[in-house]
Length: 203
Image 1 (cartoon, rainbow, N blue to C red):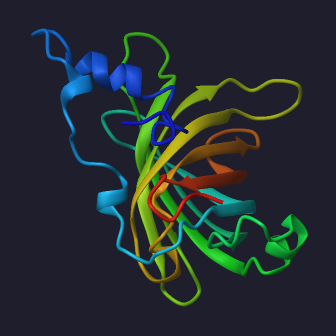
Image 2 (spheres, rainbow, N blue to C red):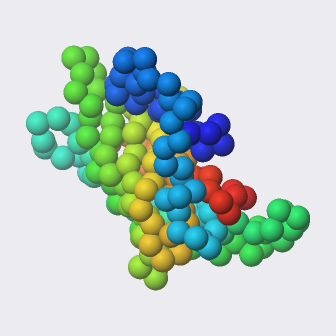
């Protein structure tokens, strides 16, 4: 995987490589061609960054063996297919389709730990008003409440399956969730996904 294709995964890939024991048998990965992200992207589909802002989400804790929380929200966002590199940035922004009331669903479960559960992970899905969807996983660390704010989660999103206007959006990015008093009740969030590098380039 090239440096460009690794963008957005710098914090996650070393852990995955360690868990997979890559190189334990002396393999020379530099000599392996493998499959590029470009080969996995449909021809002619522009890379599509996605940004969603949530201000009034609803969160509910679930009574399971491990702590879990279910999130549901409407967000205001933009879906911006990559345009010509020479086009002015303000013109690109003006052409970015707004996506009001994008539905966001996630169910996060605590990662088993002998101490307080700090790691949380689970599926996340974005659904547009026209039925387009983007599915992936959200992995993050739960931060304790501080400075008059509730707990927050700083996480990484890996989106691998997009339909409709999200077909060019699979990629990686950051997600930040800020709760009020606790994990039950309201929350706000920001999700920004940058598409994987592929033959069309990334805006």
